[in-house]
Amino acid sequence: MLSHSLDHGVLVVTVHEDPGVGGRAVLLAQISDLVRAYRPAPVVIVLDDSAARGAVVSVVLRVHRLCRGLGTLMSVATHSAPTRRALEVGADTGGTRLVVHARVDTAVSAAFAAAA
Image 1 (cartoon, rainbow, N blue to C red):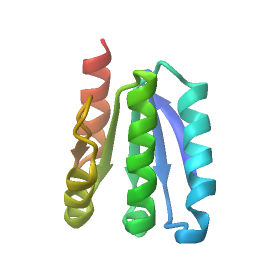
Image 2: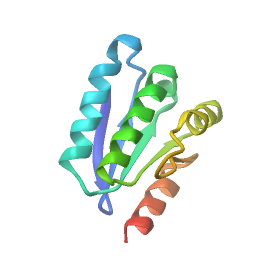
Image 3: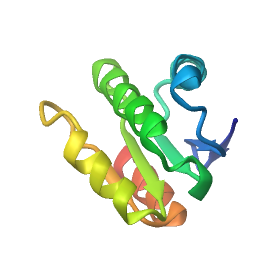
Image 4: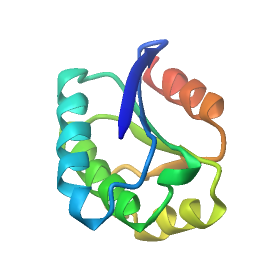
């Protein structure tokens, strides 16, 4: 369902598929555990095309709230314009703004620069 790596000190979590409504809790727990384990590294969540769906969007928004509470910088990368819009509309406006990129390399570079 997901994989992760470190790229220039940035935790990159890639969600490969939509877990559906029933798998949201598992996906949220997996990403949350990674965020806590690699803290204070900034986080980029990458949504593959097959993962850019409603259930994943809600998980990403919850992870964003977690990261805000931990003081961890988080952004998202997805090719899907409708998903980018859904994330921007659904993001909590209090605290750190959720930055959504169309390209992974841009998201990682921006996270690396912001953390430096």
